Length: 303
Image (cartoon, rainbow, N blue to C red; front, side, top):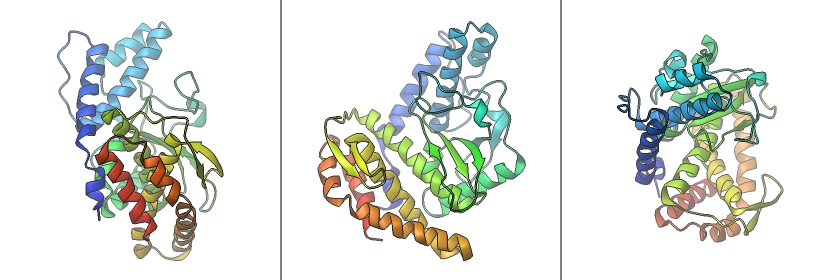
């Protein structure tokens, strides 16, 4: 059985983070000395993408002041919104939905750190720190350290309501999510979205190109999905199941009942994917990545 730490320890991702960060800095600040890293390589990688997107948007808009700001701040000014957590310093912001534009870079709303970014309210920063700690105690610290660097907290909802959360490939290491003001539920959803970021990086780092001609039935979407989306779901949902099984031991009352129902539902949904998952994994050319995805799926099925 793979330990959780083994699932997330994937050296090609580390190389990808280092190399892409260097290339982005070279594009934004050609000829300049690379900035001295003040965070981890993974955090620098995430923040460099914010700086790149911000600089590009400013250039397209003819905003010389904004462009110069990003050139001077290759970390996109992250320090102003930083929060110490169990997995390292995180950037926690709470933009309004009106601050999340849609554009050609993403079909879903997104937010780029910039000169106008301010920190989330104190209670949200505390909520985020508790959520990262909860995930770390369950063995997901390495995943969140590298793949949930910027947390954009959106709408506050009630336990049991639908929570929207997502990532976009142009901003790796950034997650967008609703929340219910409970750190355990937030930790579960952080793990899910960080899992998507991890898999995107793993596929890029190994050069795996998944054919979009193969489709598999997704019990979560209740429709046939391309292999890429199917494999993402069969990775991210098992991670939330493994976390939830661990968290049940320390929860009571409505939260315990909510998580118990969630785990029961996910067991049923995941069981439906077993035959197709084995076939979909054949599309992953890298053996290490293929074995890791299989291990997470297998461990969740055994819960």
